[in-house]
Amino acid sequence: MDNTSIWLIIIGVSIISLTPRILPVALLSRFEFPAIIKEWLSFVAPAVLGGLTAVSVLAPDGVIDISVNNIYIWAFLPTVIAAVKTKNLFFTLMVGIAAMACLYNIVGI
Amino acid sequence: MQKELKQGIKDALPIVLGYLPLGMAFGVLAKEAGLSVMQATMMSVLCFTGAGQYITIGIMQAGGAIITIIIANALVNLRYLLFSTSTVPYLKDRMPVFTASLLSYGLTDETYAVAMNHYQDHPATAAYMAGLNLTSHLGWIGGSLLGAVLGSFITNTDQFGLGFALPAMYTCLLIFMIKRKADIWVAVSAAVICLVIGYLVPAAMSNLSNIIFATIIAATLGVMINGQH
Image 1 (cartoon, each protein chain N blue to C red):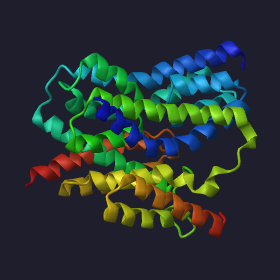
Image 2 (cartoon, rainbow over the protein chains, first blue to last red; image 1 turned 30 degrees about the vertical axis):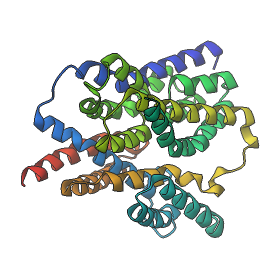
Image 3 (cartoon, chains in turn purple, red; image 1 turned 90 degrees about the horizontal axis):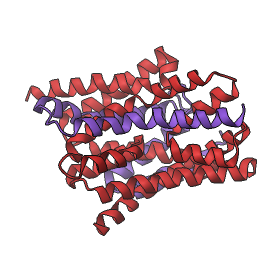
Image 4 (spheres, chains in turn brown, red; image 1 turned 120 degrees about the horizontal axis):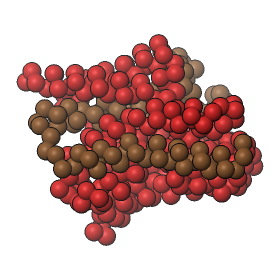
């Protein structure tokens, strides 16, 4: 692929990826949402996080893998315990990463 | 103002930890696909879309058309319409619309999750948003640059467990985010719907459109469950 095409792609992807993030805030901020819409929107974050957690742990390579061989599931367990017990994101992250490092090097997958 | 900025930067550090290895992986792939170091880095500066950038490189390497790249990216980034809309009630009246719109460029799965957690008990500020989004973006750019420069010299970062940085963050923020009884049902049903759609339509898993459908159904379910009390 020649240089001009690559730069065109970069600029095209930039516009197409930034627009959906900016546009809603730019256009909808002047309106007061009805209570029911606000309530619906308040469930977007828990839903998104539920989906992202499930996909990232149960399908780490893009394919669903619910088995004892999926070390992401094993690393998930101490992470949940750390999150519930400590309520501290950074500490929980360290527990998750350390668990994964141990599993990766011991199980050797 | 300075306190808010610092808090935003501090809250971005876990994100940076996750973005560095992912950015490096992107840099390596981009270099292999024929992009220069400058192009790989500028792509991360101008696009800031992890999944979208990987897909772009994949299509380029497969010799796909530019229009395919644009459509794939439109699909991958569609979910941000929903994310962005759900931040509006927190941002409006807290800062000028122009500032809020400008800073929203830095909305990603991760900055969204962290910011929404923060807004549960702190009012939104432009300084916090700037600290959070710009620091995260710098992590993504820095990782991409490193990956593109070092290329194949990079040893496998998986052995350090960094592959679990983002899953661990999602897990933790999900647990923090659950306040109402209905939240549990919303999160669980979204998780199940995401996986079922991904199982039935594998393409939905790679372009993340399963997240959109799952969120719309689960949030509607949440309103229905909440309304019963």
